[in-house]
Every structure is written in C-alpha cells, then in structure tokens.
Length: 305
Length: 132
Image 1: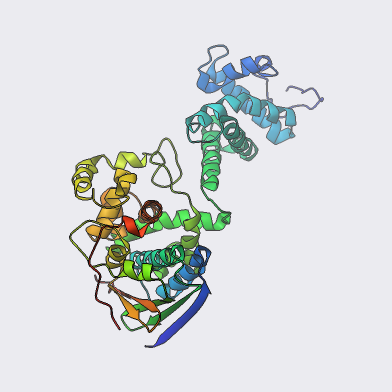
Image 2 (image 1 turned 90 degrees about the vertical axis):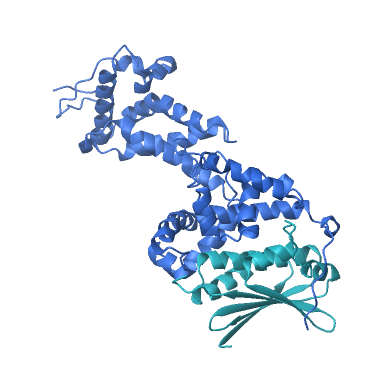
C-alpha cells in the first residue's frame, strides 16, 4: 500500500513506476518520454506503467496533476500527428491545439477496464479532432454540424446504393438508407454547395487523412484517356484553365454522356464528389468564358413559337 | 398536367438556393434519381447564373409542371438578346461546352419559347424507370 502527497492511501497499491521524476516539469525530457520516441531510459514498458499509474490517479482519485502530467507527456504524440497535416494550409500550432483537445478527450474518456494503452486510444481521438477541424474549415459558410455529418453519411450511402441498385438512388431511397427524412437529404445536398472542393491530396471521403489514398492516386490509370481527350478539347474555351481531371470529368459528362454515378465509378471517387467537381469546373469555365464574344461562331437554332 | 408549382424570386445568384430546394422537393416527390436531380440542378442553375450575369431579368419566374413521366421546368420571361443568342446555338461536332451543350447534356430536351417581347426556356427531364 502506498500513500500520495495528500495522504491518500492507494487501495490498488499503485506503486509509482520508475522514471516519473524525469517526466514532470522538464520539456526536453517530456519530448523523450513519449513511447513513440523509443526512449531507452527508462524503457517503453516503464512508461506504459507510468501511463497506467497516472490514469488511475486521475480516474480513481480525480488527481488533476496526474491528468496534466499525462497531457504533457503525450503532447509530442500530438505534435507528431499534427505534423502530418501541416502542409494543408493551416498553422502547425493551430493543429497542435486542436489535436491537444483530442488528447484531453481521450484522457478524460479513457476506460481503465478496457486494457488498452493510452497511445492506442488517444491516436484516433487526436487524428479525429484534427480531421474534424479540417472538415469544419472546408465549409465556406456556417452549416450546422448535423447537416455536415449527414452530407458525409450520404457520400457513403450513395456509394453503397449505386452498385446495389445498379442505378442512381432516389432521394427517398437515400433518406431511408441514411436514416433521415427526404427533406433533410435535400437540405444536406443543398448545404454541400457551401463545401469547398477538396484538393487533389485530400482523401476521397473528404476527410483528408494521410493514411487514406489521395484522390490523385485513383487517377493514374486514366492518364492515357486524359491525353486523348485533351487533344480533342483544345478548342473548347476555358478548358485549358482546368486541370486534367476536371477536363476529363466534364468531357465524360457533357461529351460522352455518362451520368455522375458512371463517372464516379470510372474515376474512382464518390458521386457527390463528381457533382462538386463539375460545379467547381463550371464555375471556373464561367469565369474564363464570361464574354459571349469568346465563344466560337456557331449557327443559331431556329426559334420556336 | 396533374400538378403545377410556381415560384418567383429576385434575379440574384442568392436566389438559386431556394430555387434548387423547390426543384429538389418536387423532384424527390416525383422520384427522380439523384443523378437526374443533379442534372436538373445544373441546368436550372447554369441558365439562371448566365441570365443573372447578362442582366436578363429583374426577377426569375420558375414553373414546374409535373406530368406522368416527366418534369417540365419553365424559366423566364427573359428579355436579353445576349441570352437568347447563347440559347440558340446549333449543336456542332466541335467540343465546345457552352450553355446549349450543357443544357443538351443534362436535359432530355430544352426549348426556347418566344413571346412578343420576351422569351422563356422550357426544360424537360424525364423520369427513368427503376429498371433502367
């Protein structure tokens, strides 16, 4: 039985593991203390014991100091994960702050009985918080979280239903599959107009995880088709300003007559992403060919009464 | 015709959102597929954006007629010769994505209805049977 600074006895016999003194109050040592840092002194096992000790201190006794110590210990993990997302236009420090919220949530929600390591539990929480930050930042106007989440759910539902039904689903079918009303589905589709198109490096599900394949990875097999198509569309005004993938998608939709679902299957992205890309491409084309004068001379159609 | 919905909104890009919601609501009840609905959004959206850019009307009027196998969306009246010119371009073999090509690509058909001093555009989108 051991006693803490406040005189509490420890019914679980939480003996303080070695190395604790090195972890507190010294930023340099804290960096080394992270399990991923492959510290050699003290060993990884000892840090895991320290995790467990501190987690028990916090969850059983409500020891806030133990919580603070855990946060400090795991900040290097947050930094490491935030670094993966640092090239996406957000400040690294902001990402660390956001990731730290995920860490704190993980520490607060950690279940001592589940027998997992804090690193295992905290990593998806930290990454999830960073992804959520990117997702929220992707909306150009304020869209309620519920609609954003329904929109993301619809992405998956559409991709599941198209092969199952062998056709594009109706709104009612989407609503049923997404456990929403048709009005909510329409509202979510409308709200997606406010979503900024993701970059080529973002993942197809729109969450931007580095561990996910980037959109560009899905497109390699289509390069030859792009090139052929590119030769044929050089006369199209404004097309040159679009990237290959945008030109290819517009070509498939408006010159080959493929539906959005068919394009999604061909290119390997979601139907809703195809929809966003078409809209974005048309916006860019509109900017480029705003003047009627730039359009090639073409014969007028016969007027109808 | 079994049903008609009529809507009039200011001729601004901001009005496109309520227009899309109405088109979506009628289209959903009509059991249009998501692909077809997206096509209709694109057609109405692009036409009205071009109309707004050209100052073709002060307000948009949109009428949706629900027939047994199709939705007929009529937009107008417009008074812009520039818009009329853009809508009366014959299809060619040239790969040029103009307004006509776009509307041809996403609709079953579209027709410019000429009035005495103005014109409107009638767009038809048929419902695909679930077997197709």
